[in-house]
Length: 147
Image (cartoon, rainbow, N blue to C red; front, side, top):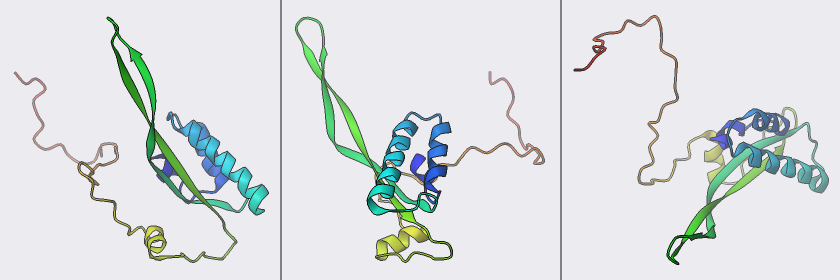
């Protein structure tokens, strides 16, 4: 969700978005963006005003952080805390120049035609909340009490 929010924004604007976001993961995404911006400036000599977040990928990590859960009567359990990974692609956009995609997957990703994996339980039918339109009449309203 946060990755989609900051894709195709300038890096400074993406950092501002993460500063005001109330989500728990926004602090980690912000620190990773600041780190990526610093590395791009010092290692790749990129202009910070021209940097754009082209792609953000957040995925399931492969490792778990294991912790002992001590119980009564000498028993114990293992608590597994899953980890995740983030990947940012930062580009330097020159004014008036459109970057060329490197391969077919990147071309489809930039055009928005890349299909999601067919995962059990994954649906694209989830809608974002919208306010009720006051001009539409309510047809067949349900009774207030249902007894």
